[in-house]
Amino acid sequence: MKKVLIIEDDKIIKGIIEFVLRNDGYNFENAPDGLIGLEKITSFQPDLVITDIMLPYKSGLEIIMHAKTNNPKTPIIVISSLGKEESTVSKALKLGATDILAKPFNPIELKSKVRTFFTE
Image (cartoon, rainbow, N blue to C red; front, top):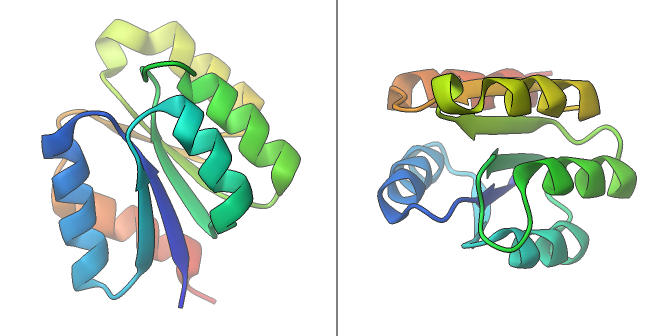
């Protein structure tokens, strides 16, 4: 079973992501902030990371750097309010983020993006 780590401090967004992942049968864990997210990347060893850019304690950019150091092949979907964080999103892609999902997002779009990383 594929493992997904969700690093998101917004409870509504987190709930939507969980709903999509649960319906598709993925094993997932949550981290409510960047510091816990860094710990869970190491302990949970996810096959995919879904992270917000703006997080308490550690940023999404730090999450990307840590995830890519831990396992360079781990795909990372960054969730962002693109208009407000455009330069940060650009940095995220340069650091190794695999895809961007703009807030607000359609759950079907999230489902499609996640599935692309898990199809053989």
